[in-house]
Length: 369
Image (cartoon, rainbow, N blue to C red):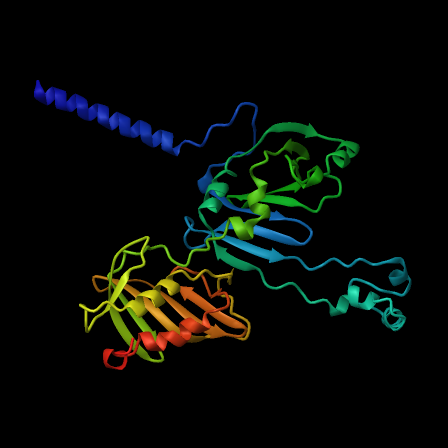
């Protein structure tokens, strides 16, 4: 009897596991009234792209690790607005003619300021290269909502007058969803007043949809909403030793304590004497907040910065992470095991750099601490 009971319980447990797996793998169900615009499982989704007349945002899978998402932020080259006088003078998208240059010079001499406000096309700088940054959890959740991609309502094909009424006739906004290597491109209307539920038109079949209000805001504000801005993924208490290096001199501290911290640091050579100065210094380093993250393979202005100090974190002798602070053109930068490149720091880091030499000084030299 016991054997049969155990077998029955085992069968029920196995069935429950299978049912849970099926539910977990199932795509989220549509809300009442919703229609499917792009029908595809999230594992087949390659990228999503939002663009307008000045910039673009890509959320895409890593080529070597599809589970990792990246955010690409870029700007488009400015379009040339040619006025009537410029056209008569022979101005074109490729540059400005001699007559056009003379007209600009005359306007400047006359004190109109036209040359300063609208520089010649040839003098406009090209946009900077796109910046690729690690995506955060918000980006991962948003990405999954595009496969399948759903809309609130399907409106079918609209005539030219109706397209103009809903803002789809002359808009520069587009949304591209790439699934299995095939791109689905949609024209995206600008909602009245800059908010609300925008209209979406498929460039493949001309069908128009009313898109929900929750999909686009994150893409439109990708720099602040979709980028992973963490310096590290571990916390205070996840390490038991800290190695601080400055000016070619390294010093190891035993670390005790955990978040919310700060942790206590005691020199390896004198573990019974916690170093209050080192503790306060490290707490300020731990709480550094970058003001700008550079992208993957992006060099800071002026080239690679020069290392000022480095902090390594270990647990039971194994590396956990690190932070390197370096000085470059125009300020200081930080880089860790988690960042994709250098991150520009706020002002006031100079004191940390100056005090790093004191933190790494031997005990005999630091008796006055």
